[in-house]
Image (cartoon, rainbow, N blue to C red):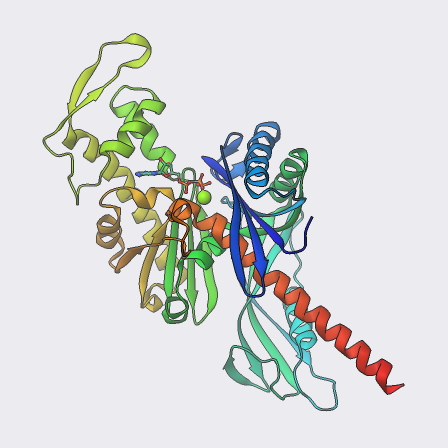
Length: 399
Ligand SMILES: Nc1ncnc2c1ncn2[C@@H]1O[C@H](COP(=O)(O)OP(=O)(O)OP(=O)(O)O)[C@@H](O)[C@H]1O
Ligand SMILES: [Mg+2]
């Protein structure tokens, strides 16, 4: 696989989306897009490897065809309520003579912060720095190049069930590819939709997909809290199917065409035609009846989210407000409903991509974020490698 290619693979409950990006320095260009219906997932987690592999293979093959390149490794999303987050800290004594903090020192401090005794079948997927301290001085964001003897770091550690993480790897492998890394869905969505100001001031990202609602709080450039709720747009669709006695396929169409929450009653007064199941008679319902069903579920989702925000202890620090993303953020009136239930200003998060209208939807926030995350990680490795090469060269020169 060409070194300048990077693949984001969002394995969602309703769709799999593969994006192939060509990287040039700090910029990227999307050169391949592939999408397939997702099967074999429930509430963000793979429950049927064979079905999941098929969706993955189809989406990646389509993206490869679109890009005109073959790929071998992907950055895959991970979600589900098996994910847990916790704070931790680590330290490292700077031993170099000049006491200037290097990339390696930061890595050592992060490594020490990742030393945890985890229960069996759990593993760390991210160790995300929140802030550094140098000789007791706190609030440092970029310590490399500064002088000190004692480097401390506060981190947010994300852990996952090894079984579920392995299921992602197995499904991608069955589809014919390898995994370069897994990335927490809300972290990826956040990278694609949040502005640096928001991340600094305090913001809560809410990604409402088909099977999960993923929440993450960012403050002072670091992630402080995350959680995944096993509820999303599929539940709204199910409620419509049950409440209006129709199939899920039909309920999904009705939701997209007429769906709304009570705050923007676009279909109030309108009669909606409902097809009965298996040839049963077609009948009409009032728009208000549909709104009532949707409003109840959406209201409940935001009540659950609000409870999590309160529990996190960070709600008062979310000074910029909420960013809603994921497919469900396209539901009419959802922004107002979130504002009503959570009591904070809300905006809808679109991936920040220029000149690419196809991906200009909250549905693609995770996939675009995976590319951004992959770029950041590769840059870390390459800057480390460049430093190692430079040090080796200095040593060679010296002798
Ligand atoms: N215009 C729309 N109005 C209302 N809902 C929509 C609209 N477009 C998409 N959705 C809903 O968004 C959901 C899919 O969102 P998304 O693609 O973000 O989910 P996913 O990533 O597959 O799932 P998850 O992240 O939960 O595993 C579906 O429930 C779909 O019905
Ligand atoms: Mg998703």
